[in-house]
Length: 621
Image (cartoon, rainbow, N blue to C red; front, side):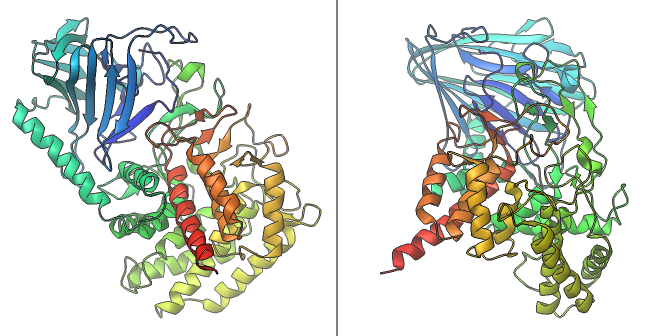
């Protein structure tokens, strides 16, 4: 069991209210309950000795950090059961081949519950394999002690406000190891065992014993759930396997009771190993979630798009954010706007990357682009007047647009949440234009009342300002902030938003400028921190969202062969089960929180555009 495995060496399982990461060595080292944003129960990913983990390994060999695993006599492989969130870790040993099958049952996902279960099935498919189990929870991000009660078949871990019940099925004898649990079991071909970890509020009775037959029914039910869900996907293009995996990943990171997607499953994973850019992404960003609406809708998942729009409308009904703005950039999954940031200085951090932050201090930043993304999301309802936005809610949207006419021309912290002061970011102005443009379209299409004259005049004024101040004659490109020469990959969204034609000369020269400065072997940096200081030390990798947006822009610009090559190369950076983190490092390693929703929604967007352009090119004689 390797301390601090690479970020990418994990698969994701979940039940649509919380999730867990399991390493390719069979170690569950990230799990929060009862929600994505709850304190961790296992956080070995952030501290190998104090974070806690739940390992099921075959003849484990402890490998010191930095030592190559040349002498390891157990080979592991990991895969998903096709088109599901059921994760299989295979152990190839000299004596036989064994598997651990991990999943979380999806039971009444739309009802918030304190009870969440991780099922770990152990089986041998060839020969004989000896498995070793270690369950070492560390409650409240590793800050809280716990008590243990163990009787061989079951164990109960009592932490502050939380109880974890462990039940063993088959020939697994649980043994106390201090306040933790160990077990060893040897299985022959065709034999199996299982352990169920059920987490619930403190004092909750243990779940009833589960029989092998009931366990088989649970497996069949979760497989049927995911097959039934992905069966609604309308995509039949060239990259169906990757698109399906991205869609399942986005679904796994959506809190079903409210329809709110989180930005990533984790917190504290670094954008640079050993650096300070370690953020908590377990919240709902208006920007990220709004852009996911179109991706999910374009795949046929209208229910998910509708659920998020309903969540977003509720934020407008709430009457404004604590910072005095109509909306806040991020919320908890239940809509709570209070997302205070604290440093967990008792945690070592992934490979020494500190500080480890819980919560996110960027929540009270001013980011004007969110209004464009919000109205964009609300306009993705198929154009029906009665869709989500009824008359009362339309009045709230109209009031938001009236407010935006007064407030759009302000410096802000921008899409990348820099901590170096407010600036006149071009992208922020672009998305204010989007808000007014989509609002005008909705009012016109659905005969809704609004000050169309004022909205139109403001929209046009923004466009003229961006074309003047956001355009660098020297660079022949749109730039990050007004009156500068700094490029910014966020502007790859310009044609997608409809602000400019994909083949406009200004846009093509901007694309050329980005290609020369921000693109490295088809991978795209967000911006150059040396040219545009962001208030943080260190550097970062290329931003995977931007790489997929680059593919989209190339495809729509008619550079189809270049786009396809870039897309195919980017897919090689996916991990072994098709997941992407936030960034890609210099030598191809994945960096940042994992998996990241932004990356997967952009993959979907790029695949759809590239399919469309390839089909169009093939139809031309």
